[in-house]
Amino acid sequence: MIARVCLLSFVSLIVLAAIDGQRRTRQINEDANRFCSWLKGNKLRNCLSHPLLGLSAREGVEEALKECRSHFTDRRWNCSGVTIADVFQNERMLKADNRESSYLQAVSSAGVAHQITRDCSKGTREECGCDNRPQGRGTAPGELSWEWGGCSDDFRYGIQFSKDFMDPSRSSEKSLSYYVRRHNNDAGRRVIISKMDKTCKCHGVSGSCTVKVCWRTMPKMKAIATELRRKYEHAIKVKLNRNKTKLTRLSRGRRGRKSNKRNSNRRPSSSSLVYAEDSPDFCKPDSRYGILGTHGRSCNKTSSGTAGCSQMCCGRGYNTVNRLDDVKCNCQFIWCCHVKCDWCKKEWVQHTCKGD
Image (cartoon, rainbow, N blue to C red):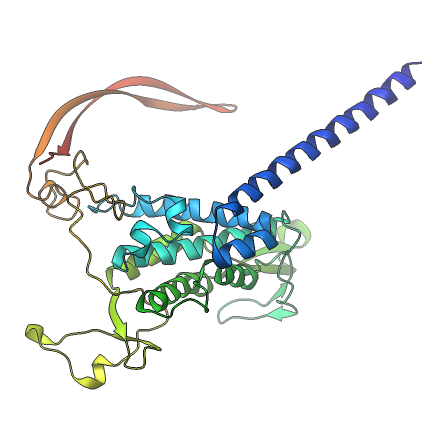
């Protein structure tokens, strides 16, 4: 009798788990189809073909925008006015063709490739998996040889999906914006390739490294965003060549004189970010591009850089407020296994930019 009750309970648990799994799968599919429904063009076609990978693309853009906001806290434009819809529908700041849009295009495209590759390696997507191409023994100067194994990140699949999903359609009008977007999207994905690394694990008796097995791993999204922020600082202004088929540098020599013909026709490197229009000052709100302005932004009174009150507040001045917050302090590790902290009062001064 007891055995029968136990068996019935076990079967009930299995049935309930299966029902719960089906419910979650149905919810994920509904979310995926809902997301696909407001896309257009090649994004819509690719999303309908692979709706779960479409969800991965959305998560990748979310992570990219999170990094964007983190990397531009010291600038008047801090990425806070950009939404996921702006990225996927190429609206507001994404269609401005300035330095900021170049960063957004690159980091979003890289974010999609990064998330797709990561989900493939986790085995959560049926369409893809690990990269089995690294095989045999590997060598590098100054290192002992190793055996390729494990689950290498299939960055090629993620990059190709990002290319198909994020790049403007070839059938669209090949304007200056078209070439700028394609270039920046590609530059973002190239950072993943350039920063691919390997992770290794030793196998042997008593911790010895008789056999060393390695697999290829992607960089963290933070590292990708940091590298793209560096490229943003050195972005190149471009124009279309005479035949309107390629981008060329729009550079000037000293004292504003145009540089010689040979230099002005040079193509920008494939890894650089490019832009076509000068950026606004970002001091005042502009709903056309989702610019929020700097009213109310925190600034550093003692800094002379972009985060300083003088530059951040655009000469409008700033307000100073004394604040008192409760913060954790005197933290101690208690064996085992938690941290105990006191609560302390912290006084600090906050400076925020004035409005008009």
